[in-house]
Image (cartoon, rainbow, N blue to C red; front, side, top):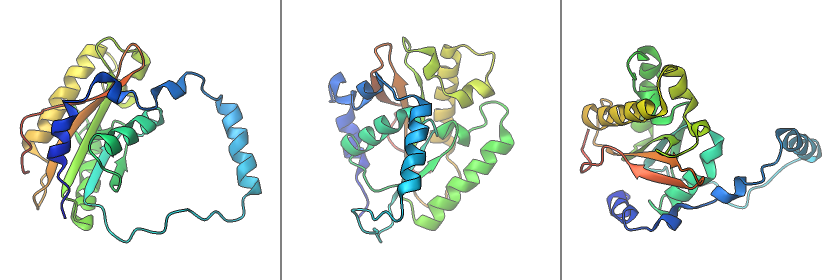
Length: 213
C-alpha cells in the first residue's frame, strides 16, 4: 500500500520547535576521531561474526531518500524521517550535496547527469513511488561550518545567503522540471537547517502541493 506522506507533511507545520531537537545535544561532547578510530579497530580485531537482531525484510521500500553524505546530520535525519514523516523503511541515495547533486547549480552538468541517472535507476528498478529530496546548511543565524561542503565547492565565492538562495532555486527546478521519471513519483523537498543554538529543523522547500513528474 503506498505511503501517505502528504498527511505526515501536514503535521510537520503543527509541531513546536522542540519537536525537532532530536539528538542534537549529543554532539556537545564529541569523541575525538583518534579515540573513535582506535575503538573501531579494537572492535574489528575482536569480531568473528555479528548477527543482527532483525531478519532480512523481503518487502522493497517504496520511498527513496536522497540526502548528503555529511554524517553530522545522520541522527537528525533519521529522527525527522521516523517521527515526522513516519518513514522507517526506505531506499537511500547518499551523495555530497544531497538533492543538490541532482542539479546543475549553474555549471555542474556532467555530475548532475550522473546522479540523475543513478536516481532514475533506483526509482525504476525498485518501484519507487515517493521521493524525499534533502538539502542542508545553516539557518539564517546558523553557524558557517554547517554549510554544505559540496555547495561551497560549487560556489566558492558565494555568501551563505547566496548559497541558501541557490538551494531554493535548485529545489524549484527539481519540483517543476522533475527528473524525467517514466512513472508517477510523488516528490517532496526539504532543507535541513542548523540554527545558532545548534537546533536542527527541517523546512519544506518549493512547498506548493506535490506535483506528479
